[in-house]
Amino acid sequence: MAVIKIKKLIGSSSKSFEDALGEIIKCAVGQKENVTGAKILDKTVRVENGKITEYKVTANIAYLWKKELRRK
Image (cartoon, rainbow, N blue to C red):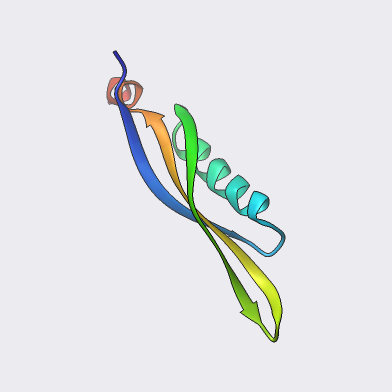
């Protein structure tokens, strides 16, 4: 039986929501090899002078906690 741990992260991009999520995944995988999935919780944008200047994604990142314990 596996135990999954959840970490909430916020990513941002000047390009798109997809790119913002990609930044979250890249960061999470860089810190933990055992990432198993992501759930998008929220999407927001920053608007300046009537134009979107930043896309933000809030997501829960899931990873296997059991593997993390073995490394210690």
